[in-house]
Structures are given as structure tokens and as C-alpha cells.
Length: 152
Image (tube, one colour):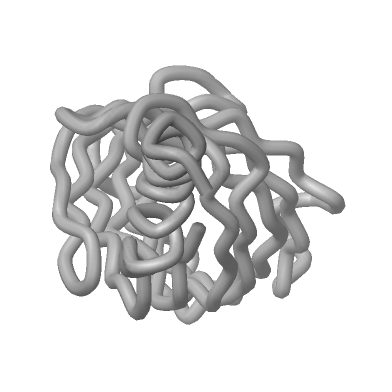
């Protein structure tokens, strides 16, 4: 083997070795959301992500109610965009609003990552969500917690 062949082999092998030893990014995360309704089926607010990945920023949500709000539990589907310092995550899922009074409801459901940009490009993940909605607030507000796993 000549020096030239050895040099070319090393140049080609170094990037492969670096990829093989690079740790997988991700793991368990919790995303806390504070939001208010901006329309009948839209909301906006802030989020804070902690755990294997940490970030914070703004969030918007579009939702579709699967039944009348006066017949608990009310099924809903949603598409949420989280725009943080490290990129954007789009999360979709379904949940139920279970009214415990005319003005308050418990929220429970599941979520999964639809897409991402920046640090979140190529990420996959899913989990469960819980929370509480206050329809007596002006505007109506909710606090949510998404718990799950995000990984590349």
C-alpha cells in the first residue's frame, strides 16, 4: 500500500468514525405550556421544555372539537407549533376535555411529533398530555404538561 492510498483511506474513514461515536440526541422530556384562546379554535402562549432537551419560546395551536362543549367529555384534535430558541417543533394529537364544573375542565390525551426544524429536524417523539382549562378566565386559559420522549 502506498502512502497516497493510506492517506485517502484515512480521509474517508475519519468522518465515518466521527458519526459512529456521536451520541444520539434525545430522551425523556417535559413540556409545560401556558396558553389562552385567541379564537374559538385557536390559542397562543409560551412553553418551557426540560429534560434531555431544554428550550423555551412561543406556541400556537389549532384545534378541532369533536362534539358539543356541553356534553362532557369533549374529544378534540390539535396541531401545535412550538417555536423555541433551538428551532420549531410541530406536534399533533388528540385529547378529551372532561368538565368538572361549567367553567373548568381536565384535559388528557396523547401527542406525537409531526415535523421539526433547526435542532429538532429529524426528531421523532410521542407521549401523554395532561392539563386544566379555565373557561371563566378572560380570555379562557389552559395549563398543559406534555410528558414523553424525543429522539433522533
